[in-house]
Amino acid sequence: MGKIRIVVDSTCDIPLPVREELGIEMVPLKVLFGEETYLDYVTIGSEQFYEKLAASSALPTTSQPSPSEFQSVYERVLQEDPGASIISIHLSGAVSGTYQSAVIGKSMLEEEADITIYDSKSASYGAGMRAVAAARMAAAGRSKEEIIAEIERLERDTQLYFLVDSLEYLQKGGRIGRASALIGSLLNIKPILSLDKEGTVYSVDKQRGTKKAIQRIIDMLDQSFGSDPVAITIAWTQGNAIAMDLCEQVKSKFNVQSVDFTTIGAVIGTHVGPGTSAVFMYRV
Image (tube, rainbow, N blue to C red):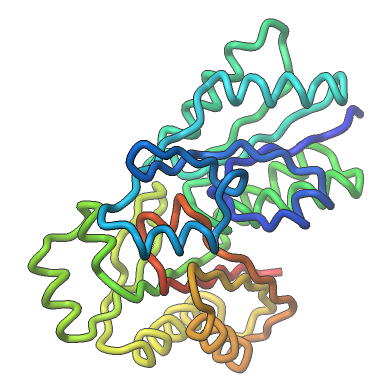
């Protein structure tokens, strides 16, 4: 059985030490501030991005990798490990063309290769946790079929909720109207976001104030997991006080077996804004 290699895009928000430890290859998306273009997690990190975002009068834009960028990474991986199988896991195709670029990049290879391209139908560490699980299984010598089965289980068995601090960035990105954003800010409304089964972002609920929003997330997770043993990842954009509060409340309520942490990078951060916190939970 040949070696199995994992490829992701930068929106998976996998910390660099984890990527390096597990040999996960990453194809960056781009963030554009006017005429300035940055590569997510390569030429701009999370801290630098949020500093620039605070100083910018206009919302930055994002763009997906080109098919040739995926082609280059696939070719390099196959040169490093001839005959390897590649599992390529990406941001929801419902919100980005990144998955489709990967598909086209595979088709551009001159030689046949065993590459499975997976639409996570998720975002941030919702996709990242699948890639990390896949890489750990590959390192343990598990088969490609076993790894794919676990990726699919995680897709079915993971709940994620984003607690957005402000409606401003959703409004700037065109997801809600200006009037709704203004009213929400005045009333201290905190939206709770998730992704549906097709990988589209939607508003699950809105609560007045952070404490009520966190409690609502706890209640929704309880409906899904109860006392089952679970693993969680806590993520945030800028400033982790709310994220740590969310983490402590989740740990006190659920049968948590492991906790991981990550930051939400520039591309996802462009659309949700600073002050966003997230929890990803799945059964173990």
